[in-house]
Image (tube, rainbow over all chains, first blue to last red; front, top):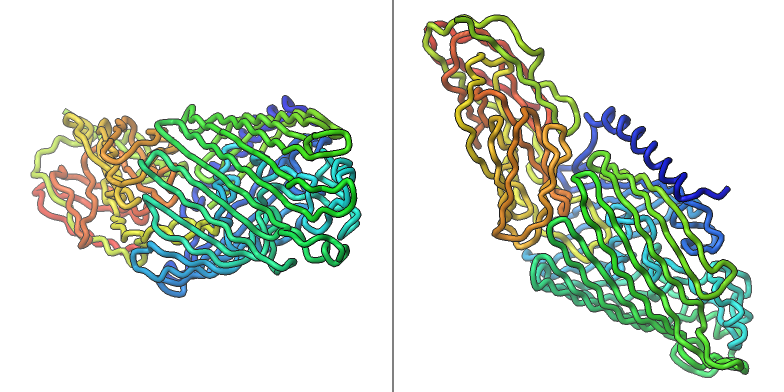
Length: 407
Length: 230
């Protein structure tokens, strides 16, 4: 069933009314702080979001073959257990329609200095690259969709690669279900440039907040394909340096390099020439706020290198350039408006027909509003307009509403 | 001349928390006797003195240590003498933002008071409230700057920061002047109370914990009251 953005808007208004009444009824026992046990040594927080959106025949908003970011119910529980003032254990368990229950994060955090200017985290840890990965939670995202860098499924896979340029171009604009002849030959979705839905496993060290912050991590996966356990012969090193020259402004620079292609691919083609099957990325992010405004932006340049196999060979790195800018303006203590402009472009490769982009460029404009029914209960509505330079569906205008509860 | 007695209803954080009941009550006899004082102590048996930030797995490290907060109780007359509503010129009060904490955590004021919200932290803050008594949003502002809000209705206002979800505070706006915030030793005193029968209430962290009837005799004097909040 197709749902128009206008019908979703009407639904959002009705839902606001119903939730407003329910919110008042529940208000007396509404938590405004995390639940604590054992004198504050065990903290529990959580969030639940339900997102209802239009059908997306162009797969613009999918995070894997099964799940659209604008059609899902998600619940998460985060627990922090403090063994001492310097050691704590954090875990986040997330349940999501189409995905099931996932231990999204589990790691130990060690703060060896009393000043907390040094922290070490080990386990399944948050990514250090970029800014959006650490605010992918619904309450930190003023809109419903994610920037395409962190969500849009490209035609690249870690466990399967094209043997020729023709194999690659045949998958152009259809990252939701990709099939290549080398490696895992079953169809499966491609990867986003930077995965925000899964976290990697490794160790991370951070120094120096609040005016200056630097973090570096070594993990077993890669930016676009985080892993719990190793699937190739190398890991990834990623880092980010952030500077807060004034309280209102933050600028960060990130870089990452890691082995991307799975060993199973090379085992399938032992004749593949040696090379670095890496993903490299560089990013800049910035955030500024003043008065009722909050403005953010990011730029990410990225390449995947896959082994050249058969003629015509994929010799060029598969590159992408992505950037977005978003703004939120608070119209009223309960109401804000937000907009995000988002561009994802891909580099050219040499093909028998001449130079062309190896993937279809995508543009997205998302605009919407959020209404705070009460603290911890937020209703969002947004419209996502997507345009793609190729693929089965080249333009798609989608609507979505999201109800979010958090404590 | 007859004087009237009014009640005081406080609604806290969207939840209806009746700190007093009913509206206009019976006639109030002329205050022929001496005013009295209600003093005593409030013992808080269990209180979370550190406002913890939400456990955030997305952090690259630990957040700043949370300071211990003083979260006092407020003792007030549920029903006040009519003369109490002839309030003097409303004044100013301040609620600072320091170490990502509102200081004080509880502010008790009379209707019409203007409250300043200075920012003493290095980070931005964004004070707001969605309480029915006063809905406001001061936007984001930096260290050294201050914004003010006038509170012109009685009730409870729960205050938050839009940037730091662990920051919260209460402002109790009274329509009369017969209230007191307990000090760090638990002591409180409400002075200048005309003779009469009252209901004395104690409020703590969003709820009225206990109410108690008491009488100030015509001769005035001091009435003692002890409360224990568990």
